[in-house]
Image (tube, rainbow, N blue to C red):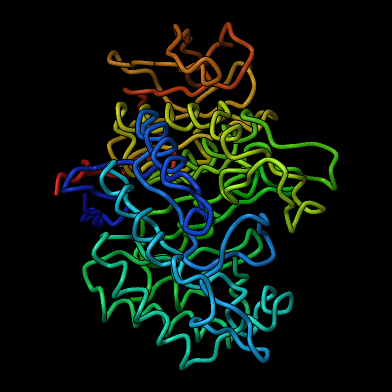
Amino acid sequence: MSWTLAPSRRWLLRDGQPTFLLADTVWAAFGGASPDEWLDHLERRRRQGFNALLFSILPIEHDRSTGTRSPYAIRDGRIDFAAGDPAYWDDAERVLTAARAHGFTPMLVLLWNNFVPGTWGAGLTPDHVMDAEQTSSYVAEAVARFARFDPIWIVSGDDDLNDDTALARYSAVAAQVRELAPEQLVTWHDTPTARMPAAIADGDLIDFHGLQSGHNEAWDTLPAELTRYYRAMDVDRPIINLEPCYEGLGRFAGRERHSAADVRRASWTGVVAGAAAGLGYGAHGVWSWHRRGEDFAAGDVHGHPFPFSVAAAFPGADDVSFLRRVVEDERLWGLDGDADLLRAEPSGAIAGRTPEGVVAVYAPSAFALTLRGRATPDLDVRVYDLAARRPDAARWTSTADGVRLEQPEFPGDALYVVRGLAPDADSPRADSPDAGSPDAG
């Protein structure tokens, strides 16, 4: 169960085969999950089709449920790893042992921004900031303890990536992981407002981009905007939206919560735009491992979490599992957004194309859409009813303007997969279409 980069550097291989990475967010599981709770959760997510799990090795101090434990204490204004809960690290290994036995790859955040100087999190919890020597010692111990689980390492957690001191610290950590675990993949986790500097994005300290489109006002447009930013970098890398909006998370100062439909829209928008190597999913209550009756540090920001066992059953997890099946079954490897494919329309639909010419269109609402291009004799159009998680019967018409995808006869969001669409003569892709095929190894 080892992940590597495809030779194209556009998607990921698992044990040598193109595979969509689908990660459940369990940031606080090391300090929260009991053995029985954890095994039940792993079995649920295994059956749904998840293959990775997102953990924060250290607690997320400003976003904690009160029942979670800590491996350290604060003494004289300084973090002390010898003064915390001594069972924390053994429990972390138990959690990871069970995860690997169920077929999951752990994705481990080494440094949430609270522990790094120059970050917004450090301003909230200044006593938790580690100096360079303490950071290096902690990272060495973490890699020594957890590398045997063949994780994907995430060097930063929820960072704005705009402070030179913080960037230098994260870069030093990434370089240290490269030295200590050279065969394991490395990525970064940032905020929705972050834009990784090109010197890092195109450098040797990252294998794939792990962006966060987030939960706030631009939750529906940022998946495409951020993906376009990273696709424009000089060095091609797989892109994964590790944190689209969490299902059940409160937004807009308590006026509403993100729904399963929101999660589908953010997830599919990012995938079709080019973040097609994988996806993170979060349920509000699972990520913080919240139990009934506990307090939550960020309730005024996110709304009170649901009990983890309730949140684990939210329907969005099945929606994103269906997303993975569609991407793999339709072989949408290397999917990249193409704004020239769709005639102008206001619904927020987005289109992309794979290197082999397969077109995918995500439509958040049920309207007719027109694709620029010519229908060949081999034109094949498939449509998926994403809310119902099933294929439906597609209808299309060849017109002077292109290929009209007729309005589906279900009211929710849809994914169209189109093969055999030839570019218009005046299309920017007509003279020099992308070429290639999915890598097998």
